[in-house]
Length: 362
Image (cartoon, rainbow, N blue to C red):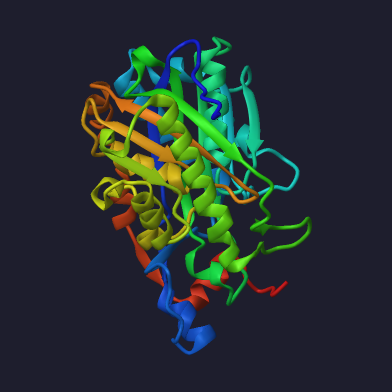
């Protein structure tokens, strides 16, 4: 039986924010170099961080956007929110330091230090939703009033490898707080994990390894399906009860196939599928998809969110949008996710190599 998780104290998303760097590498550039243009890419292009960008800087931008939206949806100002922020957690598989937390950098930048809990999370592509689960627990137990969960990546791919076509950069931040202040209430969640080694990177290795087709079955589809079905059964809901569904996006085919196999119509999957324009942002993938949905969702809409992380596991959430989402979207200083996607500067492979530092082949 699925272990349905629901906090004792109702919890919701009080603020949310996305960030995507402006640089874009068209997949054909990769194909021309490594296969004479014969490879068919699973995405059109991917986002690439600038020389002065990494998971820490991008997380700060997303966190600031989330805090600004929270000011619009709650009765507090930004300094009051920061003072009551009891946890700052950053999920990523590309933290800038092997030993030094990203979370303390983010907490300092948004004014949450020194009396806050800070930690980095790691579970491949579901590190961000893993942080969300913990944040729900912190707020739901009454340990803290607010907790910040970030999913962000500047993903690496070995030159010429299939991952290089899709490994993008970007992600999202969510401020979790009391349901009465929320723009979307967390109705419940379920997690599903197994020891499935479909993707890994050993210590001291620069690039990750993957098991090719094995990453689809029994990894991605089995975990996405099991978590989603478990949540629907526990809540006695069906796909038609949702306005939107967001799944992890390693490429364009997987989330579309998973959604349709589960009984969701392809129209329910948009606008949350962004991978064709920004690539797979790993820990930020499903989380940034949810920001695109929240940018358009109407009060009363029910949203399904299911992440996937290699190794392997999925977190599945049911959310209900409230009236506060309308006010939260009114801050003129916060870019929508679609704005970030449209804001692009195309680069060639040589510029990409310089920005990413991809001079090593092992």
